[in-house]
Length: 365
Image 1 (cartoon, helix red, strand yellow):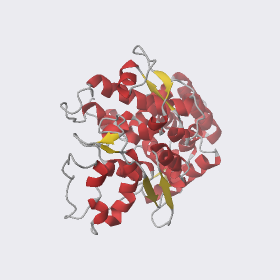
Image 2 (cartoon, rainbow, N blue to C red; image 1 turned 180 degrees about the vertical axis):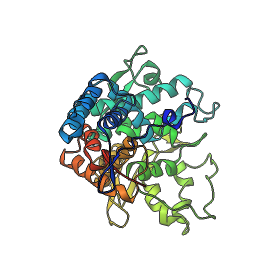
Image 3 (cartoon, rainbow, N blue to C red; image 1 turned 180 degrees about the horizontal axis):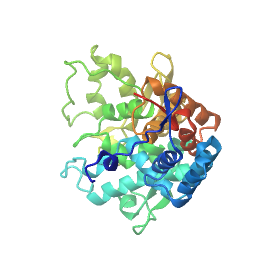
Image 4 (cartoon, rainbow, N blue to C red; image 1 turned 60 degrees about the vertical axis):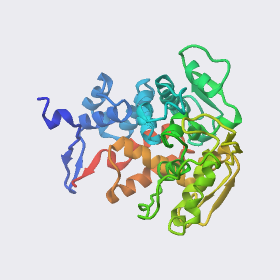
C-alpha cells in the first residue's frame, strides 16, 4: 500500500466529458481545494459540501474557498508558498564562512526563515492585503535573537513581534535577512545573484546561459568594493547584453553583506547602492528607473505591472503544483485579470486560482 502511486501522489483524474475534457468530481474538487489552501486533507464541512453537490457550482466552490482561507491553517500553507517564491528554503543550511561571520548562527538562520513567513502572511491576512505592501511595508517580524542580530532595540524573548524598521532596512521582502543571505556567496555579497533573483523570481524574466568566456566570481580585493570588482560584467562586450539588466538591480542591495547585516562602508570605502533598472516591465519596453536606495527600488517593483503579473503566475504555479505550459496560458491570464480587478488583493488572488476554468476542468496531456 505504501508503494502505491495512489498513496504517494495526489491526482484528480476527473470524469470524461463529451468534449474530450475531464471534469473533477465533487470529492476531487474538495481535495484540490483543501490541498491548495491547507496542504492537507478536506475537513468534514468540505466533504459535506462535496456530498450535497455544492462543489459542482462555481458559487459553491468560491464559498468553500473563502471559508478555507479564513481558517488559521491557510497561513501555514501561504508561508510555505512564501519560502518557495523567495527561494529561501535552503537558508538553514546555506554555507557561510564562520571566520568572517561568527554571529550568523543556526538560531539566526531559523529566525530569518520565520521572519519571511510572517511578513508575507501578515500582509496577506492582517495588513492591507495588497501586493505592493510586500515591498513597501516599513516593518518586519523579529524575536530577540534576530533583533539583536539586526541591531534593533526594545525586543526581548523568543516570541516574534512586529517592529518598525529604520529606513535603511526598509524594502519589504527585498530586505529580508533570508533573501539577502540566500543570494550571496559564502564569503561575500553578490549583486549578480540578487539582481537575478529580482529579474527571475519577481519579474518572471529568463536569461540565456552565460557565454563560456564569462568568467567566475571576481577575487576579493581588500582595496576595492564589490561594486568595483563586478564592473567587469558591464565592461565586457560578451557580458553586457544581459548584465545591463542584472547589475543595475543587484547594486541596490550593496548596503547589506552576505548574511543580511547593514554596512555603510566596505574595505574602507563608502557603499554606493544607487542603480538603474532597465526595462522593468519587459525586455524591449525601453523603460528606465533610477534609484538611490533599496526602498526606492522596492517601490518601483511594487508598482510594476510585470511584478504583479509575475506574482500571480508564481502563485498559480504553487497552487497547481507545476510550471504552466502553453495550454494553461489562458488560465494564467484569467487569474491575473481577476487579481488586477481586485486591486491586487492577495486574498482575491488565492481565491481566483480556484475559480479559473482549468481548476475543475482538465485536459488529457
